[in-house]
Every structure is written in C-alpha cells, then in structure tokens.
Image (tube, rainbow, N blue to C red; front, side, top):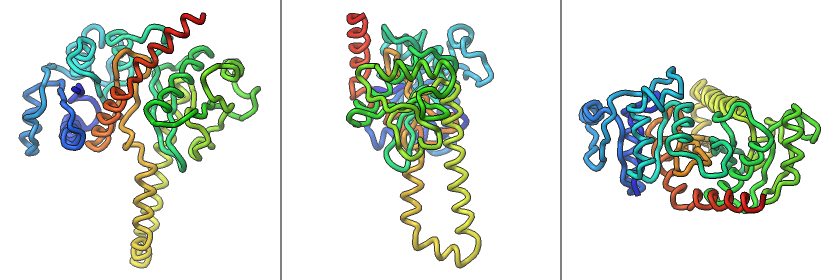
Length: 334
C-alpha cells in the first residue's frame, strides 16, 4: 500500500508534513510518496536531521497557493505539489492521496481528475469530530456551499455508510443540522430535506438536531450544507481550544492551583485527548473513485500521521467499492 502525500500543503509544510510521514512509516509501516520540490524537501530534512530515505519523491516545481482560484488546479496549477499528487493517484501510482492544502482545489481536482463514483451527485467532505460520548461525522464541511434536498439525502447515506464501515458503528443515528428539532423548522430547503430523509430507506434518521446538542453525542452523522457545516466545525474547534486554554489558565494561576492540578492531571490529559480533533486526521472526500483525505490546514506531524492512518482505514474498509455498488443498486431501482 502506498500513500501519496502533498509535502507542501498546509501552514506548517514541509517540516511537519515530513515529520508526520516519518511517524506514519514508523507506526503504520506504510509506503509513502511525497510530492513537491525535491531540493526543498531534501534540504528541510537535512536541516532538521530527518531521514527521508524510505520515501519516494515525485517532483513538483511549485505550490498551490491558498489565494489561487480552485479551478486553476485543472489548468495553470496542474504542476503544483497538489496537482501532481492528484494526477499520481488518478494514474495508479498510489492508493490514496493526503493533502493539507487548498480545500477548493482538492475538491475540484478530486471531482475532475480522480473523478466521481458514478451516481454520486456531488462529493462531500466528511469530518470526524469528538463529542463527550462517541465521535460523529459532519458532512458536508465545505465542499458544497449550496445544496439541494437530494444532495443532502445522499450525504446522509454516504455519512451513515462511513460510520458503519470505517468507524464500526451499527445503525448510525443520522440527524439534520437545523435551528430547532421540529420538522417544520428552518428554510424551505431544510423542511423539504427533513421530509425526504424521514422516508429514506437504508438510514436511521432521528430528525433535526440543534447545534448545541451535537457535542453531547446525540447523533453519529450530522448532515449539513457545506456553508453551515464549515461554520459548525470551525466554531466547534474554536470553542474546544478556548475551553482548554481557560482551564489551563485557571490551574496555572498560582502555586496552590498548580499543586491542585497535579491531582487531576491524568483526568485532564484524558479529556484533552478525547476532545482532540487532530486524532482523526482529516476529512475524507466521500464520493470520489479513490481515497482523497483533506488534512487540516494547520496540521502538525501528529495530525498528518493520523490523516495517513485514516487513508489506510479507508482503503482497507473497501468503502469505495461499497459506495459504487450502492449507487449501482440505486440506479437499478430507479
């Protein structure tokens, strides 16, 4: 198994990307191909005493900048580390692609270079996130800003299948993100989506969910359009970080509070780990023919290693074949 990794995607590239790949190789035993400028990769590794001899490097002369229009991945930016990685995946040089680079470019490239699974209306980003109970998947988290009820219904099916086959949850509870739990709440599009989800075969639809209830583990799959999902995930991450920082500040206030902290340190460490979204690595682009994982733009080595681990699970689960069959069965039933 070989994972292709964009060495220059994200805020902390290439150093943290290289470190994450080294950790993944050590812990997961996977083969890795880095895409990017060979001279810069080798210099970064040498300057930081990192051994990258186990990795193949596929040359890419430039980097896809975050300010560049996403569609340029098909044109002038095809030769970037992101574009070269997508092309390598599409041509069979690896089994999955991981990048912390531009979400828009990854979506466009995943859809039009790697290509959609036949029958999938729009690929969607599905981010697995922690709660006070079990993790859930939020889909979509930014790939599709404007959605139709039929698209959201498909996201529900894909998200449910992901949680069942990859996260091991039987009959995942599916909920629609809304401003109230009543079936008449929300925009006309959400009201119509509720009606369709309520009679949709193959999912365990539990109704609307208010955003404040997501963190308590009341759903395994939360369905939203990309705009709403992106707002939810960024608020979720920000609140978690704010709470953690405030708790730390309370215990670091004086000597007595520092001593008190020692008594609950193990519990606090468990809490921080449970609420750490980085352990899930990134968001899979669900609905494309080969595994594409969007790692967080601020990924450090730990998050990048886990994104690679997520790619391995994605491959091992046979998820893409399952989705392809689901879409084929749906066509036959139409």
